[in-house]
Length: 387
Image 1 (cartoon, rainbow, N blue to C red):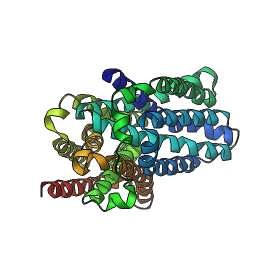
Image 2: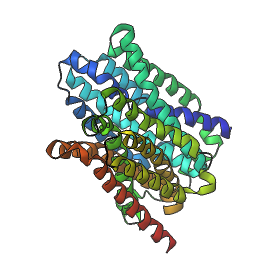
Image 3: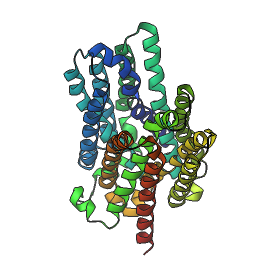
Image 4: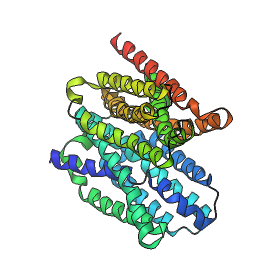
């Protein structure tokens, strides 16, 4: 039964990744049908992010009341409804309306599942689960591309992903008894301590360090991915096709890296995996920073940076119960998810502003500053836990 539940959780992580890259893939076609400015995608993304942050912060209360299994099923159902709503939208205000449940569904499931896996499974499964998130995020642009090639309608792409989510919702509701049989739900709801809440979590020593570390990491990852093509083409002279290909290889490096990390994560431990990841990220940035007319070091450095990103996110999450206690992990992981979305929402546009006012060549310097913040906060937490 434990292995069957794990398979269900793997599929849930695929469903978590499916909507994340859909808007970016669909927006060139969507904005033409709505006669919307290119920048309006940022408005929709901000609404989605706001909902995600809110539901992440509420995840402790929701999971305590409903249990991980039901929160997961309801969250996927909410996301499916939002995607279907997108496919029926005929105006920009309707897209903004459906973006609210879009974000609310993502935050709760992310925090609830990450906490459940951190409590009940080994570090290797956390790496592989986040690898499966990458599978979902990689599949949806292909679904949208196939829909646009088939009938030229972005609505078909959203409807197709919504149908996949509906099927996964049915599976998750059918699998609800598995959560109770494996003891996880009972542990969450019986003899539970009082709700920790945001104030209570912030009073725990080291929580501020890990929130800043997570914000820095997610800001670096999303900035690196979003601006990679622009930097390679605008600052290093790569042609558009080469820049786009290597930008996609950055995400492939994260996904493939998490698959490989699963084989060594249990032996190395979360703390060492984070340090190795930061070291590899730094090596990638050094390659990007190398001067000269050849573009090869910068192209290779982007892939190396992606490989370095791979272990950091899952290892930070998996280490949460051991760092702060299993009884506190749901509240703190919810706050980590919120912090992650703050970083991924605001760090990329901040760099865009700097690039516009100063230079695209600040790309590796900006990433290096975020990496330094990640390293300092992570090591402060490590020293605190040693003491």
